[in-house]
Image (cartoon, rainbow, N blue to C red; front, side):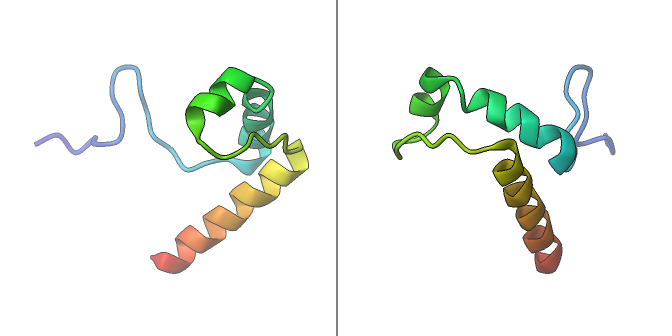
Length: 66
């Protein structure tokens, strides 16, 4: 049995990192086609700070569920 379920040769799943991922999310949000394909909701341009707050809040909520 493979115990390395969340990683592979080219992919490794990890918990989000608010410091680095917030900047990445903000860059993706500048791509209107990406936002249009992502969801039916209106596109929102969040700042890096806003994405960081959102990621941190999500991590706290996830920990509470455990």
